[in-house]
Amino acid sequence: MKKILIAAAVGGLILLIWQTLSWTVLNIHGDMQTYSPNQDTILEFLGENLEEGFYYLPTVAPGESVGSMEDYMGKPWAQVFYHEAYDANMGANMFRGFIVNILAAALLAWMLLKMGNASFQTILFSSIAVGIIGYLTTNYATAIWFQTHTIPDLIDAVVSWTLVGLWFGWWLRK
Image 1 (cartoon, one colour):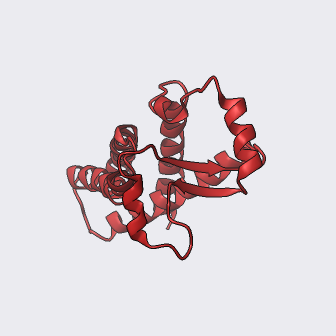
Image 2: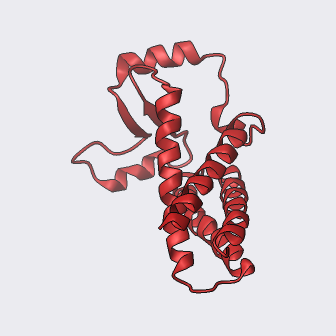
């Protein structure tokens, strides 16, 4: 149990450090935070016309036929995550992220230890596979339908879980 707890704590920290670097210093996700010089006008308009929530525009009104979506083909569309108040509590968000990372690392460490005496290579490639599986079934699956750019997410999945795999390959075999 001690081995899993240490693996998870360090693995979670590795994930958090990579995520921080990816979104800040390396700015891999810069395209997901594009500045608009019209942001104040856009936010004012949204505030006057939307309640807090997630919107996919255009979409059919409740009770309308899905066939009416044909009218929108070839026209602009958008996804809007609208919040009524900006609340970036960085400390709480980083804590929650760290806890999630620890949990993910603990689950992977537990699975790897169930393999018996796995080699360094098996542990490393299993860790990378977990990252790629996560990417394919979440970010990339979403991109198929909503045309989002996911290369930064793929980089995050491969790099972060490779780093965790290197750590696990050393630690879990001790």
